[in-house]
Image (tube, rainbow, N blue to C red):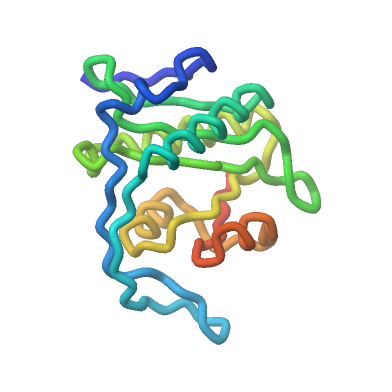
Length: 176
């Protein structure tokens, strides 16, 4: 049975991720060329190392400290998915809240966990008076299909900090 709950800062540590499998085998990605979106072959395996988890833990703790949301999906008390939303409004009209991460363990994808996590992120952002979620999203075809199914579209306004950090990400938004 899957259950969902908000995480607190004290439980965010390397042990939390002991049953979490980040691995994603990517073959094709979306790329914007000459103003048009196309699918290009870009095979690689996305898998986190210990240093990636350490950075993630630092970021998630910061999200909580700055009044954001870290929300998890659990099975048998093991984390199988999580989402984080930063605590401040951004954008030229303070219309966005930043969905900074959403991940579902490889062994649990396709079971509705991502949809529930995304819905929790939207509820949180609405409660904080945001008009839209902003997502700097992995460009893999499968990842983009998920975001499109959630109602996301290309962002009207790009967050340049995200673009510089992850130039191959797709900059998306989702109306709340």
